[in-house]
Length: 87
Image 1 (tube, rainbow, N blue to C red):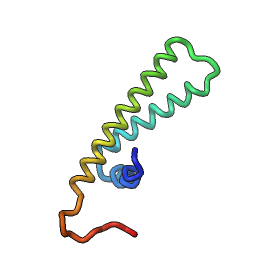
Image 2 (image 1 turned 45 degrees about the horizontal axis):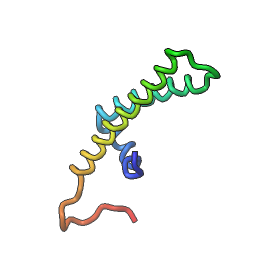
Image 3 (image 1 turned 90 degrees about the vertical axis):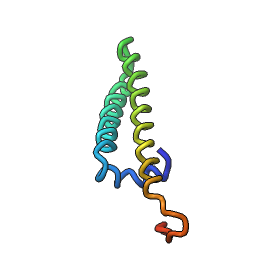
Image 4 (image 1 turned 60 degrees about the horizontal axis):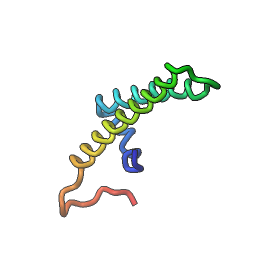
């Protein structure tokens, strides 16, 4: 996620159920991936699982980014409207 996305993440975790579910699943996959990466040796099936987990995490992250982009576009101020940016 981009820095802008990271700023919106807490808001979306509170207000968007789909985003919250995706983030939760992403975290679960991250935990399992961490378990695998701390092992000295991975079996063949664990190697396949590791690759699959990484791909799934990327898919979830992409879906989360789509929600962020959709939110940002929907909340963008109209031309001529006062800016809400903090400075």
